[in-house]
Amino acid sequence: MARRALPERTCVGCRRRAPSSELLRIVAIGDEAGFSLRPDPARRLPGRGANMHPDPACFAQAVRRRAFGRALRIAGVPDDGALAEHLTRQPPRPVTRPDEGR
Image 1: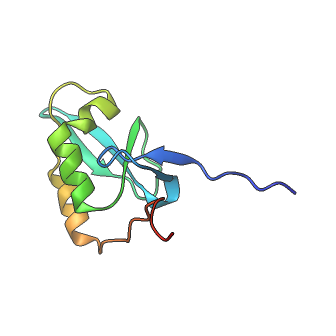
Image 2 (image 1 turned 120 degrees about the horizontal axis):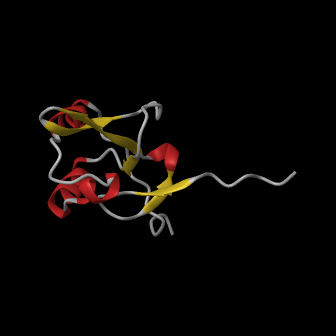
């Protein structure tokens, strides 16, 4: 029997491809003040999602490049406070790079 390929996504921070199970899905929730970024670890929230390694370095790169607005197709700069808090509470997971381990 043929094995199915795992779905791959691109991290909005470091722009590296990884299996979707290694990435954190992020959605933009709109309210009267604008949009705020929310983590979606269960991958169940409705709407368009962006994927990112659960790593503060990838988060900092994505914020610096303003990648969340482009990936989620929203105008303006979304509030990233809830996402930053979520990342600081989580223990960092090792990020596997395709060029490592050779």
